[in-house]
Length: 426
Image (cartoon, rainbow, N blue to C red; front, side):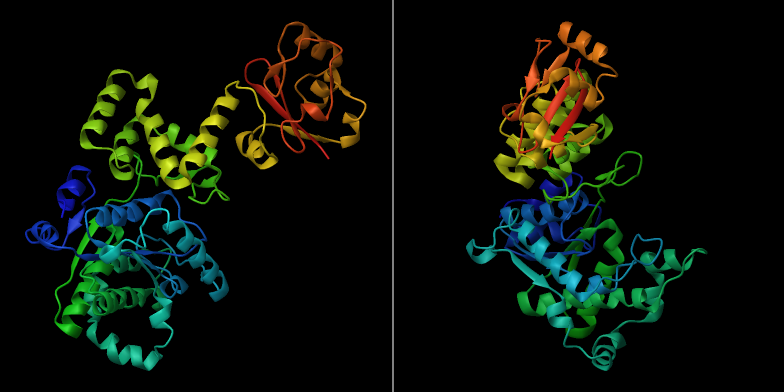
């Protein structure tokens, strides 16, 4: 067994531990089973959920058995931890779709067929759906002192707010998650629950329930939440969440988000989210301090995570897209890829028939909005500032036909170094 606790410690990934004296040696003595719960509020994991998923991956690589729990049942209620108001409840159909989407993604990070420490994926709806209300109150509810529940920070914080209360539904969430821990202990021998720092109350509730119901000793570890230096959540942009699904966030967008990470956040991301060694990260820290303008840390971070999440092909696509945006010639791409690369670039549609007889380049520059008039378009061409698919066009009388398309329907025009526009021919 490798020393996973020391690994997590130097990375800064240990926030709270239920038994700091016992757990480090306990983890080195033999293979343990640990679980992390994931909330199925969408059909994809996001950058924030990558942290606990990689936690399980690290445990498995250290010789332990990981369990990924998708909360099909608890997702119907919503965890009040860290939330200022109650969330909208999802339908059973939507939850099923979300669970399936997350299930497919997890296979990229965890090995589900490697012998004794193969990962297990479970859905707590499978064991909660058969409980009647009376059975749950009798078997589970009686083991929860209300005064203890009220003392939990996740509950207390909401009760102290004047702008939003806490429904009985959300108040009951703690019981469900606590029983998940007990159920996994009884069925899989799971003795350790891992979660973000906002899950401390739910984890300790499960430990207490295990002791009351079966006299078993369970343990918990929390990790920091993935936040920026200013305290805001990592993986949130003006356009929305950074998702792991390429259908929601393209490999290019994913890569670009990480390349733009602030210097003060880069070191934390390298420790939390990559599998780089301590020495490699120390060298990147030094390079960032001496030459921050080179952005070596950010590029390495973007490469490591894009490869992990989207594979070598996804990384290659993202890097190529980056080169294109900075002037590389464009070819052999599809409409979706171009739309992702040039998401913020103005575009216009023209009839496909205009390409049949050849569309004058001058007219194309005007139609795209890159030139205000034909005279201005002519001057742009004469001065060498007109580009089609990042290839310079110097002929005043040049025409564009279907051979000039960069994808099925799209042509990329450029004026000068950075002024882009798309023409779509439909």
